[in-house]
Every structure is written in C-alpha cells, then in structure tokens.
Length: 284
Ligand SMILES: NC(=O)c1ccc[n+]([C@@H]2O[C@H](COP(=O)([O-])OP(=O)(O)OC[C@H]3O[C@@H](n4cnc5c(N)ncnc54)[C@H](OP(=O)(O)O)[C@@H]3O)[C@@H](O)[C@H]2O)c1
Image 1 (cartoon, rainbow, N blue to C red):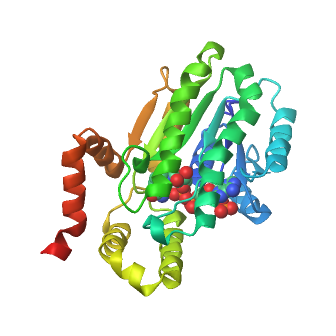
Image 2 (cartoon, rainbow, N blue to C red):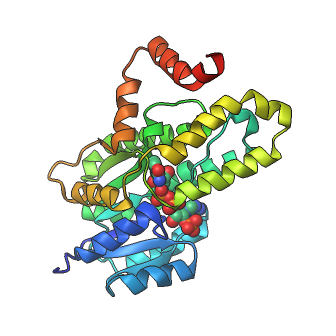
C-alpha cells in the first residue's frame, strides 16, 4: 500500500485494540507513532510492522514521558499531526466497598487525567494539520451499571471530554469522535480476572458474602459473553479517521449497542431490569 504521509499517534499500542490499530494503520500506509511503556513491546511491534512505524515510549500518567513523545513526533511531523487515538486504558470492576482506593486512583490517572494530558500536549500539532482525535470509551461510558462504579465514571468522563472538546476545537478544524466499545477479546480480560481474584483474596469474608451474587454475575459475564476482535475496533477507528464527516459518537459491538439502548429507558424501569437480572437467582 502507498504511504499516505498521515501521521497518527496511538496510546497503549502494546496490546489489544491499540496494537491492532497500529498494525492496521501501518499496513494502510500511515506513519504510525505507537505509544508503549516497555521498549520490548516497541520492538515486538516494530518487528511486525513496516519501517514507517515508530514505537514511542509513552506513559500517559507521566508528564515527562508525554513531553518526550511530543518532541519525537514534532521532529518528524513538519505538517502537524493527522490523528491522535486515545486508546490507553485500564479496567476496574467490583463492588465499590471491595475496590482498593489506590486502584481507583490509578484508573482515573490513566483513563481520565492521562487522556486529558496527552490530548493537551498534542493539540498544537493537531491544530496545525486540522487533525482528528479518536477517544476510546466503553459501553460502560453510556450506562453505569453495578460493579462498574469507578470504571463507568472514568468512561463517562471520556464521553464528557469528547463532547466538550468537539465544539471547543471546531474553529480549528480538529474533530473529536468518541468510540464506545463493547466486550473485545483482548489482554484486558485476563487482567480483569486477575484483579478480581486479588480483590476477592483481600476482602473480608463477611463483606464478600454480601456482594457474592453481584460478583458471580459479572464473573459469568466476563467468561461467557462473546467478544468482538481487536481488529474489528481497529477498522472502525481507521474508517473514522478518514470519514468525510467524522461522527461524534460511535458504538462498536453488540455489548455497546445494548448499553446504549438500555440507557434510553426510564430510570425506574432500567434499575428494575438490572436488579432482576442481577439478584433474581438469590431471591428465587
Ligand atoms: N477489551 C474490552 O472489552 C474493552 C471494552 C471497552 C473499552 N475498552 C477500552 O479499550 C481500550 C484498550 O483496551 P484493550 O482491551 O485493548 O486492553 P489492553 O490489551 O489491556 O491494552 C491496554 C493498553 O493500555 C496501556 N496502558 C495502560 N496503562 C498505561 C499508561 N499509564 N500509559 C500508557 N499506556 C498504558 C497498556 O500498556 P501496558 O501493556 O504497558 O500495560 C496497553 O497497551 C481501553 O481504553 C479500554 O478501556 C476495552
């Protein structure tokens, strides 16, 4: 494929959706700057890509790392930046009473503050190109359900940031699209299971017992719900980067569309349906 000279930065490109997006855009001829935290992840990515792809060490919670990444990109992008894909993100599931405060803080640092800091830092380059920002949200950013209080808060924040910036940046021709993703079969799912085991190990047995129906429900969901593949999300991101009219909001995967539809219901009905699904086994 012919190089397009379209320069795109992707955060969290070591695995999952970010990695699939980096490799797809590279195959299509883009000049990809793939954000990774470990040099070995950058090497692994580069080994599968063309020499147009540049791994960039980028920890979204570290101001110095962000500034260094902007420097690297600036040196090779006289025309500005065509696209920024804010993909780096963590998951955190579980009843609030069982969630470690430090995990909640880390979640917000990565999913919210990191996304804001990276976007702010790349805006001068994006303005120069009248570029595009794609923020990766979740179905949990459309409807806040039990077990996801902290995660949903972080993804609702991503929706809010996207809505605010979409109009703020309109005078500069910079578009902002927010992609709400349903379940995707990525490394994130293994991390969710490991985090959950840690949470259960550290919980007091009495409190754990109170939340057992909730925990078991979502354990089954993680294991049993079919997920889409990272490449399916990558293709949507690629289409949106080139769409003649970038969309404000997109949903990818059946899980995200289900959340969007549920969110439209009157709150009383929605709560009743959720409680019925979650607790009917216990009361039956
Ligand atoms: N998988 C799903 O079902 C699902 C559903 C809805 C939304 N999403 C969203 O999709 C995005 C990608 O998730 P994924 O499923 O592809 O998960 P993943 O495979 O676990 O990838 C997450 C990426 O974020 C990176 N990351 C974590 N902390 C970072 C930090 N401080 N600075 C920079 N990068 C950091 C990870 O890097 P390391 O390898 O260095 O840790 C990794 O590259 C996330 O925003 C997630 O919330 C996923």
